[in-house]
Amino acid sequence: MRLLLAEDDTVLRDGLTRTLQQAGYAVDNARNGSDADHALAFQNYDLLILDLGLPKMDGLEVLKRLRSHNQTLPVLILTARDAVDDRVAGLDLGADDYLTKPFDLAELEARVRALVRRGQGAHSNLLKHGRILFNIAGRRVYLDDVPLDLSARELGVLEILLLKAGQVVGKEQLAEKLCSWDEEIGQNAIEVYVHRLRKKLEPAGIQIRTIRGLGYLLEKAQ
Image 1 (cartoon, rainbow, N blue to C red):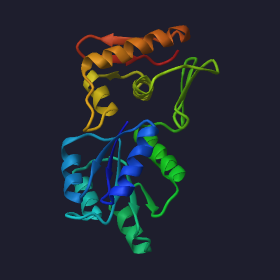
Image 2: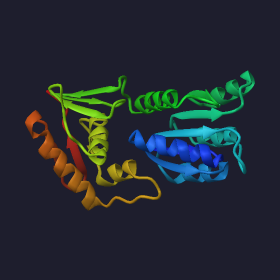
Image 3: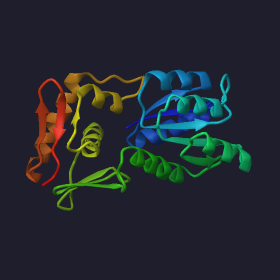
Image 4: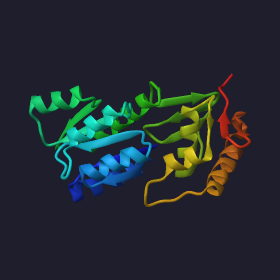
């Protein structure tokens, strides 16, 4: 899953980026409101984490412009502004959640998981598909309660396919969700990750079908 973090505090931004990457997310950074607005216009994200006190364009203006384009992207506001009026303004403009600085990283991660999950139409941190169980919070996959050894990229591919079970997911879509601006994943790499996943999921009787010219399909469990 790919996130945009709009935060002008360098220390906080770098720390949050590391935390979120360790949790399995691809993270792009925007240092001001104008950069965030530009990124949102040209890139698809699964969540926007938005500071209100941004230079060049205030966070509330970024949010207002986002919603004016009818984008339903989940938005988590992070801010030092703790006045009720500020919270109300953000929520009225279309924010999905609000976290006041300083905050606990564990709480931030839980809110991020909830918003990303909600944006994907999932209702639990546990994704079940046949004999496979994916614990989103713990970033672990189990086959009949036995942990499967998957790399971070393989976990990312599997998570996307599970969330889109029954739908074709293109190679470009997978690559877009797995990497941030400073990374690059080619279609050949996606093919390698899918090949490895297929071998590891064979004991579960789960197949990832290749739909020629379109992408991959994880069929709904029977």
